[in-house]
Image 1 (cartoon, rainbow, N blue to C red):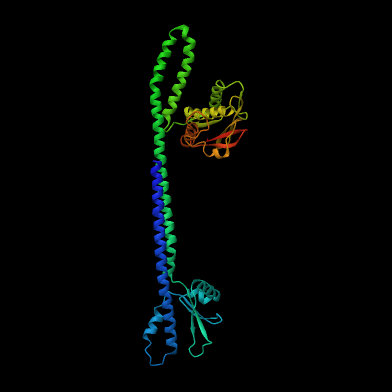
Image 2: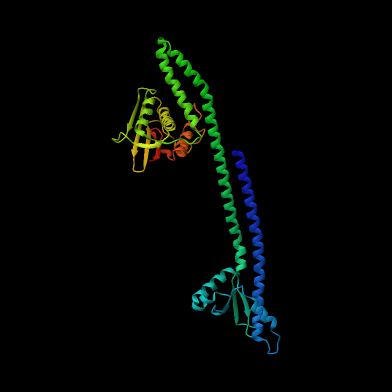
Length: 383
C-alpha cells in the first residue's frame, strides 16, 4: 500500500510539472503575441491621430477615425519630451478626472510595462511626443493565468494526497484491528483450556497453592486477550476513579520489579479523580508506560506517577529516572516498529497512542526527556 501511494505521488508530481510547464510556456507565447499586436495597435492609433490632426479638409479620414474609436482596451498616456501629460485614454474616468496623482501613478506603471513610442514632429525635429501604454485586461489575464493554474493544480495535489493518506490510514487501522482480533481469537482457545486445567488442580488440596498462582496468570492471559479483542471496536467509556485505577496498575508492576525500584503516586491530596475511560484499554496504556520506564532504568531508580485534576481535563505524568530518549528519537517513539530495545516489536507505544487518541479522544506525548536523566510521558484526558 505504501509503495502504491509513493507511485501515485510520483505520478501526480510528474503530471503537475508537465501541466504547469506546458501552461507557462504556452501562456508566455500567447502573451508575447498579444503584446506585439497591442504595440502595433498603439502605433496605428498614434499615426491615425496625427493624420486626423494634420490632414486636408477634403481628405478621407474614415479609416483613421475608425482606428481611433476602436481602441477601447489599451490605456495610453501622451506626454511631451519633459513628461508633462498632454492627454490620455482608457483610464478610469472617475479617478483620472478627480486626481492627477492617479494619472501620474499610471504613467509610472506604464513606463515599467512597455517602452514608450516616440513621435517626432516632421516640421520641427526638436519637438517630440512620447506615448506610454499599459497592458490590456486580456494581456494581464493571459499572464496571470499560469498562477491561477498553479493554484488549481496545487489544490488538486493537496486534496488527492489527503485522500490517499486518509485511505492509507484507514487500511492501516483495519490491519491493526484485524491483527488484534486474530490474536485475541488465537489466545481464546488455549486460555479456556488452561482455565479447565486450573479447575482440575483445585480439586486436589495439595495443589491449591499451585492452582492459585496459576489462576492469576491465566486471568492475566484472559485480560490480555480481552484487550486485544477490544482493538478495532468502539469501547464503552465509563466514569472511573483514576486514582484507584492507576494505583492498582502501579501495585501490579511493583510486585514484578526489583526492590531497588521506588514507585510513587502523587494525587495532590485527592483520593478521587474521575474520567471516562475503558478500564482494560486504559490499564494497558499505563502498563506499557510503566514497563518502558522499568526497562529504561535497568533495575534501579524511581518511577513517579503524577495525577493532576484541572477544571476540564486530567493530566497524568509518568516520569522515570532512566537513560532517557535522544532528541532525534523523540519524534519516532510512537511509530509502529520503532524500538531501541534488543527484544520487542516496538508496538506498545503505537498501540497506546491509538487507545488514548482514537478511543479516549485524549492525548499522549513525550513531555520531556533528557539522556542520562530520564523521561516523562504525559496523558491528557477530557473530563
